[in-house]
Amino acid sequence: MIKQNKKILIIRCGLLGDTVDATSVIEPLIEMYGANVEIHWVSKPGISDLFKYDTRITKVFKLRHTKLSFLFNLEKFKIILNSLYEPYDLILNLEIGSKFNDIVRYSKSIKKIGMPYSYIADDIFKEHRVNHQLRILDSLSSTYIKQKAIPSIVGVDINSVKNKYPINEPYIVLCPTNSHVGNANHRGYRSWPEKNWKDLIEMIIEETSLNILLVGNKDEKKYFKIFYPLQQRVYDISGMTDVPELITIMQESKCVVATDSGSAHIAGAVAKNIVSIHGPTNSYQSAPYSTSKNNVRVASLNLQCSPCYETDIIKKCKKNICMHDLNAKEIFSLIQDF
Image (tube, rainbow, N blue to C red; front, side, top):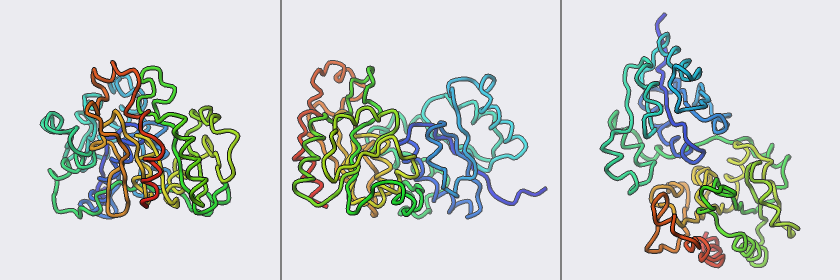
């Protein structure tokens, strides 16, 4: 049987923000390989919901225990085995490191490309990771439409969201949590203090007519107790939404405020206005990606010691002043700019 459609395997098995940014390669690949191209994606199980309603992605492999060899990892083995019967036209490995080398090495594909070591050693922390991934695509073709090479994700119908949640426009979305909340290994380095979030809510209520939606995943739900009792026009829907619903809620918002998190990157892909709060992390690399469709404002004190994430400096920092000293007035002034 003659294979009709081209077939691509994308390996990006990171966290939510990593995966959102990696979707920037989808439209260029469709442009290169045709509208009927089959795109398969290797993802973490929880992150795979990002593609639930995305018809551009034909299949998602939900990969656990990524460090295990394919000899001991059934999902890896299935990917390799399937490729022997139906080879890929392209395997695009957007991961850094060797965890997925077995998939790339033993899967059958006409072409295989990934992250060259020169890119990693060169300036991986000096440019946004979207630009870094697009440089890999340039080795295939540099003629794709650059304006389309941006993060793009798919939510649900807005009416289904409005019928389910207390959404009254106009509204602003606040994302007070991230993966560092409650994480003893990271001491909340990326987190903005509770008091600052409360101060920001006060300012929005007193000086605007915006409603406020508080969002977060179900594992973070307990941290939202600090906002109770809720003020009028403040709605806590943390732990209630799935990823596609969150996409739509952010898409229809006036503005999204978030720390360096997966939520910030969802906002960057779909929201009109985003305030991204940064302290120890590198905003050049990990802030929401700026495009012609959004307005991204990075809130940072720009201290001499920042960024310090994953360095010895952060281990010695006791006060996390880059986040604690960034007050609510600074954030509110950025919101008012929109």
